[in-house]
Length: 143
Image (cartoon, rainbow, N blue to C red; front, side, top):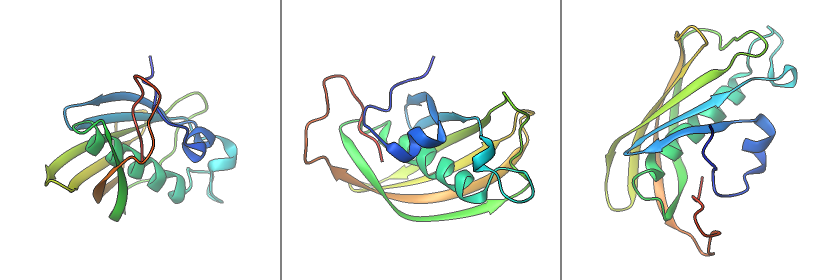
């Protein structure tokens, strides 16, 4: 069962990411790429893979500071293999908070295919930001 993101994020909704783990500096997202998300080689477009990495790292950072939002400061991505899954299968994004300061989070993210093979890896730096508005009761703010 998916965990609510707690905020309306139209791009994440468009891509269909689901939040499956959100605790203790760790996060997991699932993503079933649609035909419109593929590149000319019929594999998941690198931009969609990078978006999944960005969100999985941001949620890992937020999982230890639920009341804060985060914004991406920098991100470095390496692609190891095509992020390709059969229809009905999902890519898995795994995020880990590596270190944090009062205002910054240093993270890493991995994208795995349905067989558990590493497709992409990223490191990212995020800045914690106070929310200027109140989220609905029980919701989790997102990137």
